[in-house]
Each structure stands twice: as structure tokens, then as C-alpha cells.
Length: 216
Image (cartoon, rainbow, N blue to C red; front, side, top):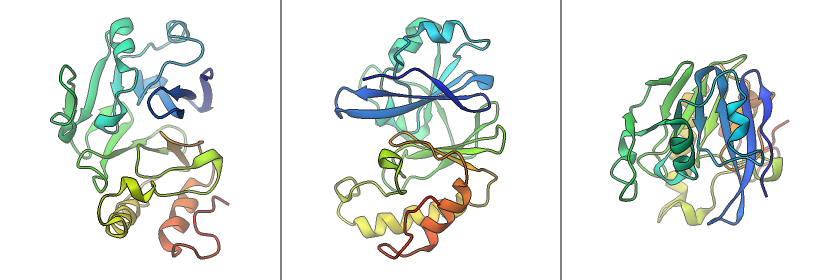
């Protein structure tokens, strides 16, 4: 199941597609003014949709080595450069590579990398400085079925999941110093308004208490 791209914020397009290995829909984004695809699958409309855009894709930005997805198709069609966290280079499968970026690098115009690194050493979020701003998450924060914010399942957090969750909260506190109103997810539905307040509540409210993870 694939869906057509939808402009959810000025210049930012979102779509979902069924991941063949996970057997569930995942989200991809295109920051058109920057020509930047983030963790891309190919949408329902195919690659032809991008050929009609004023700005065609110039690079693919990965939030981790696990999110290569259908990057090869964009490289073949548009000659995209693949950008990935420095730590991802040693984790990519044989035959795959990219140009590395570091924490705080402007990876594309208006798109800045933010190291998360608590789940895996290359886990990264992206700050998109368009409109009122957005944070794009890879695996560090989820919003399943458009519901409450959630950490990844404990099975994804290693031998000490509580320590990892505490580390993620610390990383999210750093995100709160930035200007943004939207939260976008590789796994989950976008939260287009009130994202800053929702992330603050998620960080400050104890797990299981009323309101924990709520987006309103």
C-alpha cells in the first residue's frame, strides 16, 4: 500500500508506503526547496511525480543506516547524493555508502542534523527551518496510528531499555531549545500543530501518568 505525496507544511511533502521487510506502512518526506528526500520509499505516484516538481530531488538524507529503504531508485533516476550520519558509514551493508555529516551540520539548505544516538550510534533527527519549523525523527520517537507519542518498543532498546529511554528524554530536552511547531516521523503520522508543547509534555510527564504521550 502506497500513498501519493501530500504537502503537509509549506514546501514539505509526506507520503506512506508499505515497507517490504517490516510489513507495515512507513513515512517518507521531501523538503522540496532543498531538493532533499528523507528516509525515502517511492510513493504511489511513482518517481514521475518528482519529475513534475519545480525542484527535483538532489540528495537523500538518512536518519540512520537502517533507513536506506528505496534510496537506490532515487539515485538511479535523479543522480541523488546520499547523505548519512558519520557513524552510519561503518554500519551500512556492503555496496552501500554515502557522504557523511556530523551533528549540527546543515545537510541541505534549511535542514540541520541533530545527533540523538541513544538507540544506535548513528540515530539522528533533523530540524527543518521552513515555516514555523519541524523536527523529523527516525526511530527515536514514534506516533503510531496518529495517536500518542511513544518510545520504540522495549525490544528495540537493548538490554537496559529504561536507561535508553532516559537518554532519549535528555536528547529531546535539547530539541526543545529549537524553534518548531511540527513533529514528523519515519514511523507514524505527522503532528502538524502544537508539536513543541507535545514534546515538552512527553519529556516532563512520568510514564503512565495521565496525559503521558498525549498530543493535545
